[in-house]
Image (cartoon, rainbow, N blue to C red):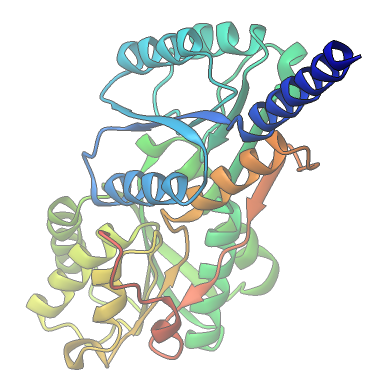
Length: 316
């Protein structure tokens, strides 16, 4: 009888130990981002690492400078047995590695851009991004309001940015076509999301165009360079400039004395959106239902509300 009691107790202890182990088993997540080559990119890596460290999970964090390196990292994560991969796939060419992970049952959460994989993996793929179309649409609305429906606008675009450029410009032109027929786009200038390049291109544009009421810029870095050129040229005709991205330096310029003669604005597309991406995939691993595609809305920031968007901890 004593042997039976001891055996029963041992069995109960073994079951309890197994349950405790099962309950303590943590989700294992890989987080992949491009190497920090640009302020916004550095911001994404910063917020991603901070976010994952807030959770009681096992993780591996990696950055890469090209598709081959990122593909190798995906394969490394497969070998380590991760449950999910959060990835910002700035490079084409990682599709094969991604499908290898999906075939193993590993979930993939794409940030900002989606990896084009076979449709059969749709149930294991998630996407979280900002609203590029909305950025252009709301930027046009802002310019329309500040110009009271009449004026000449210079567009600083970046065709090399692919769908980012296409979506933001499409939103901008769609709004003008529907609501602001008396706002004239006098030129569309191809530049870059780099302030030095934008400064040079804006300087040339100021020489070419004697009357500009507003500048539609897609990116905060572009806007910083353009504003420098405007100030150096002593131009006072420009009443509005937009931007996008969430650059803290640009936000601070909105309240500076040098720029009070112009409405400096930005459409939010903050690098801290990746925090939502990580939150969502952990929720999925915990059994919650999450939409497979989440588009975060944009907000217009200017001197009236910029205090709500300042973040002293942000590296960008």
